[in-house]
Length: 337
Image 1 (cartoon, rainbow, N blue to C red):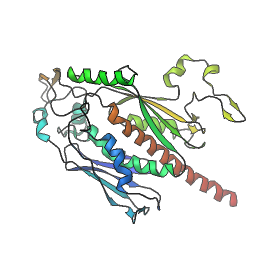
Image 2: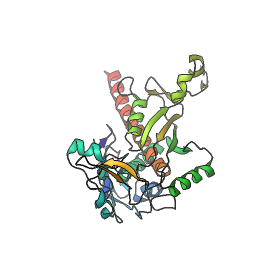
Image 3: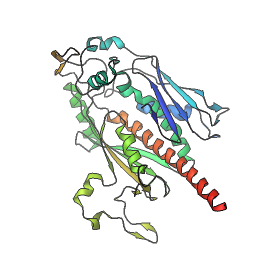
């Protein structure tokens, strides 16, 4: 699936080394002030080539607003956003045309579709997230209008939580031709109670699906997450008094519905799959071989994945907000009958 959401729907398109990537947003309310300047700062946080610890691919990632905005405001029609690739080097991947890279989706794409884009992974590349981030910036702009703010931070890199030591872990991995992963903490404040549905449309289930839909994410926690398994009910329940909840072990969601507390999410990000060290693999003919992956890659994708994760949380919350608005209208109309 390349489409995400119900009421606030996005469809992303494009490949890592194709001419462009982008997104079409359908369901954005009309009369929201919006311009490329609202989107570009978030894309700048995600783009490569910003420092010695990121991929040296020099992409400006300048966003173009093609439709859905007139005289500085959204029209309620589909919003098309485009980011052109300017520093693609598909020839870097010629030697990998018939070889499956360990840790990548090369083998599974070939098995599913019978064909794959070997140029940096095509749609399975981290560059696919450009469209998500652009759409997430639009969602965040809409959420801010109703008092909801999404933010995130890096909690760990390769098991290290000190910021200076995190950077050193990345430098060490790069020097060794290897890579490292980490943990990101996301939060959303100002989320009103009532977002989400109690069974199959649980808000935490939607968030988990959104996060696991990011290629490098291998685990998701809501609130205490796995730590809850080591607590008793008396320690995990969130007591209430006349002022509200006295704790937030649930991460702002109870029974699949937001409870008004801060929504707290943690995600585990795997080490970048493309590494310079020799690795054992096989080719499309079944022959065993050893490869080293060339091209331009991040020794740690966590810093650039942070705005992607924030974008996905914003998209889920915006979608849930619009769904709840529909429900409110339905209930109000029912009360009038």
